[in-house]
Image (cartoon, rainbow, N blue to C red; front, side):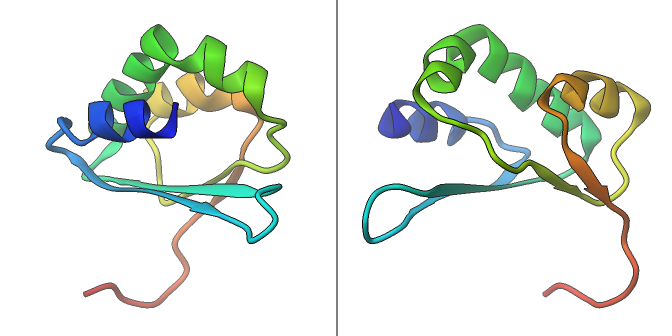
Length: 95
């Protein structure tokens, strides 16, 4: 399923990063996602819910879900069922 999800997501021009990482023992997976804006995130999550959510969520135990930035009200509403922690910008820079 990771290959299918990565290939499908790679067609989303406003998805800036979509990277999967796995621990040496194969027991922990982190997925890093970054979007151009809230609209792009909403489009991605909507597609995820339609295409992959059922299979993906039945094959993993989600233990943490962190959202960085200032997502729109629509994005927050869409993410609410995932029970995420929201982290607002506080300083720094990106290149």
